[in-house]
Amino acid sequence: MTAYLTNADLVELTNWRRDLHQFPEISGAEVDTAARVVAQLRGAHPDDIITDLGGHGVAGIWHGDQTGPSVMVRCELDALPIRETNDHLPHQSRYPGLGHLCGHDGHMAIVAGLARWADRNRDKIGRLVLLFQPAEETGAGAAAVIDDPRFDDLRCDYAFALHNYPGIAIGQAAIQCGIMNCASRGVKITLQGKTAHASLPETGLSPAPAIADIIQATQHLGQAAPVTDPAFSLVTLTHIQLGEPAFGIAPGTAQVYLTLRTGHDDTMAQLFQRVTDIARTCAAHHQLTIDLSTHDIFHHCENHPEATEILQTAMAQTGLGQADFPLPMRASEDFGRFGAHSKSAMVLLGAGTSQPELHHPDYDFPDDLIGLGVDLFVGALGQVWTASDPTE
Picture: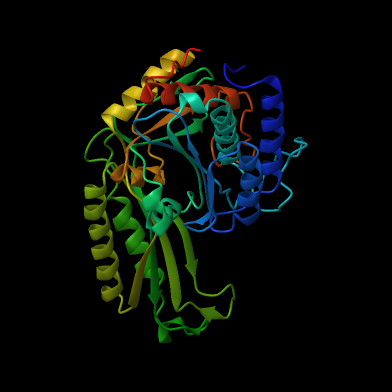
């Protein structure tokens, strides 16, 4: 059900969402997905379409009759490098090892539905930018879009986004003013020693003891405090590679992947420095050379008070209840970067309490959320452009 789209709209958007689901593309490779978005937007007659934004990003722009603030609504293009196991779905991913297992296909369908509403209601909108952002899953996409010279012409007074969230009942949503998502970054530690024959390991220099020391020391950096505590931090070991997969070679090289997570960017800088110091000290103690690099950097995501109030009012108008859900989330989100340029806010839209978790191989976006998401955003736009009546 939706107050702003027809049943035919919902059928078409559902089919389009399921089509996107069958052809997932990971961060930085969203070529065909972007082309499908452009084709969908053309049917909503925007005044301009910008492509290849910050990679494969797409932005549709509408100039309505209302004066006042400009608004951006953002969704994501990318899928995940996870094999989907939903064998019963007729729209299961056709690409082995790839899947829309975070619901970005559904987010795109919601924003495409908002485009249809905007096309039919130009008298109720002002300047509206609908952004289909690339590479959210790696944390690179928002930064690349903002660094694109064409973004200067896309800056808006407000920026809104949503993310579906299993564990929250359908018909409810979660939002708060302030921090919504934790900061995170990946740290890749490369250790170099010297290989040896497996019968004479003492003639080489194995990184294995250093790996053990690094793991033991960094796991103690995580604080037991809840995520709401300013002292919250978490270090997660995600991958180890030691030597070659052979029985005759004692290892000489190793890689350790750690994901660091804190509630705020400032505490992230402190945690990263501590991890760096530990890794370098362990490498020196074991006479190894070391290289460190950072990846998938997400700033904390913070909701602006005014933008939060706008979404909360829209939730009430749409009939969405405020979920009893712990915030901020441990999970990260690169939407927070837009907060440096706009009054921004993100809301979590309930995807159901029995739904598999995000990134689970059985996850599939609930299509009932398409109309609900459109209604929520239309309500928010009605708060910005006060001359329009979002209850009409």
